[in-house]
Length: 139
Length: 288
Image (cartoon, rainbow over all chains, first blue to last red; front, side, top):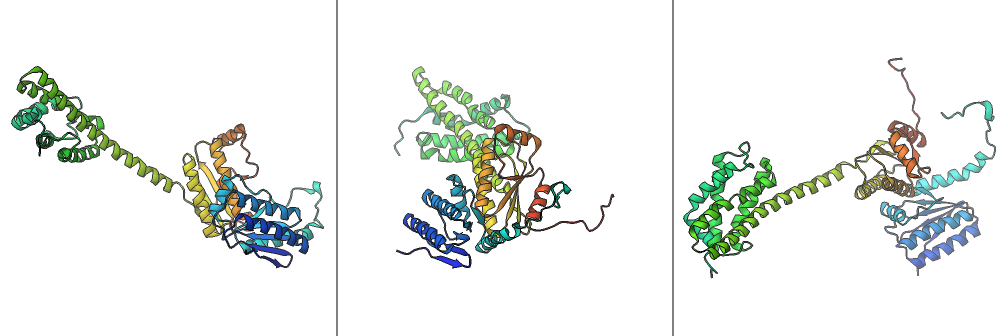
């Protein structure tokens, strides 16, 4: 039985689902991915589902679960390339994947992950303007 | 072909056709549904006499009204109904045109049929025949009307869901008219499809043209926004009029997860800022 490969790219893990998901495959992916995140200490996970044409409620829940588990393991999760039909199905099933970041394609998903990666550094010394100094620079 | 029984209807139409036609024309001229503004008397007379001839031939065939023998009559009536509807006749007026044939035929039958019992039978045959033909014109008119409505509905569905590319990576969806489930489905699908095609990161849903927002419409909007978010695109809802804002709050609809703006311009400005564009004026305002 084939598995869904999990590729390591720097601090991120990359999962591309290129086959029709069935229940056992999804369960295996969930186990593999969580253990890989724990092993590598990855800071971000990108799950590309652009080749996924249809989902049922189980697969929809698995996607939500995998993303949720990755987040608990301190890895930001980005789901990319969701097809319109899949998005509509998930919404109709009431699975709106709260807390999961999404992007249109892998490239933008990677950019999003990198921006998370950069954020702690930027946020560490916040250029704290005095609260009473005046209106913010933005608008 | 084994003719069951020669009806007097056939005999009357064959032998006294001219008298029936004259009486029928008088009947039509007196009827309140006569429309001299839409059809000339000569044309009406020509149609009436053609119909009488077809009726006579069909009655002689001995078939029941639903049979093959009456096909020419039905075809004639179908085209008559369609052309009259196009001319501006109502379905009632077209049906009355057929029903007004009863009186002249009854008169002729009364003169021809020998005994009372037979007369009742003959009147029954004649009246069911004419009723069936009159109803046929009405059903043809209704079918034509229904086809028209169906086509217009489809047209409206197509017309009312344009997805506009406002800027590089910014889509706009100006919604006009009442939102129901079928329309929202089409709107959602076309928006998501365009997001895939264009790779747009921001979509503005403008509901200026939506007259009312109830819980169902709000639900549909939230679903659309959520689906777009799942695909990686942000949605902004714009064009919320004060009354609609009040309705949304009164209904307890939670739009806190969705960016909302009062006007499309505001939403566009926000979309530009989110996608990293900045706007500035290079020349002073003319009236300043």
